[in-house]
Length: 443
Image (cartoon, rainbow, N blue to C red; front, top):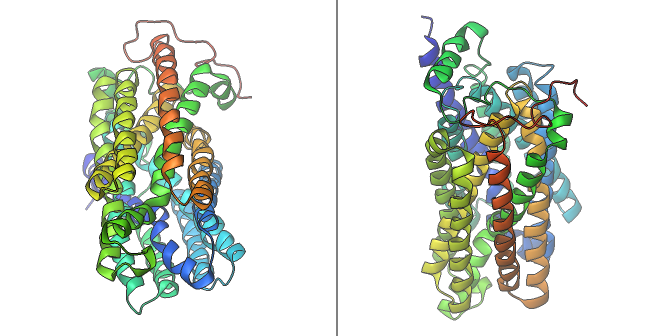
């Protein structure tokens, strides 16, 4: 039985979402910090740098996949990525030094997840030119929820006799296996399958319709004022969210230790699992933010949504700071949820912005270039948090700095809104910027 295009794309969206959910393991690093520091006596700065390295490698994987998609099929790249992930998790399970952890989990797993992420996202989105925001939101919701669903399970395994090495053995089988299975359904649409969807976009005149099919050469995109402004905006706010996600469970444990009047090392096992649940609320918020922002972007566009996003970060960072000032786990839980939600919205907004303003044909490459923000944000957020924690014994100084980042981002919000408004963007009423939508060969 041959599937109709609309039925097939619904299944592709479901499988792609479930696959990205498993890729959310990248944001579960904080649950491994405690057992690794106990076994190897590593400092907090060192363990948090592992997360920063994984984000760097993730971005490299994004770039590699953008290049590979122009030369190979989805199935071929997915199988290559599965092999890389299997090797990475097996290497991680056998580490005995920090350098090995940087290479195994940080570099190899980060690249593998980055490649898988950036082949699933653009391939599935090609099926949804008429519902770009909605599809982006659902896909990225899966990625965002991965941490929440996986962290308590991993924590329970770590607290048992199963051990962290066996957890990575398990990952080496399950995640690559799922990635290979998803190739049985996911593929790029044929021109005849997608023609009807594109006609729907033009007929409806949705928020992204006027830019959805204007393909901008990579060199011209990089020279665009809008690209630079949006990139800096993502770096500032991304530092807040990735820094918060990077410390994750460890911050929850420190506040719970104060509440219970014990050291972090002496927290009962049940409390440690609860700490993972609290930090995992960031993933719940992340998923909800990604899911909710998709329809909003389809209807409102970037220009109207990003000021709201900045306001969300103001509220989120306020809760995170207050939670540490009064050692209140409820305030921290709300703060994590809001930080995750805010991050979910900016990631979907970034996907929408890149596709709507710079086109479809090189989306994977363009997305990976914009996603370089995560390198800056993860190193500034996680390394900064780890360093200041080592010096001051608290994450609070870093969150004061993050508050300043949110304030500076407001100025860039205004600049991005003005730039988007100066384009023939979402209502077709203004002449487009020749740098943003030029027709010369790619630089």
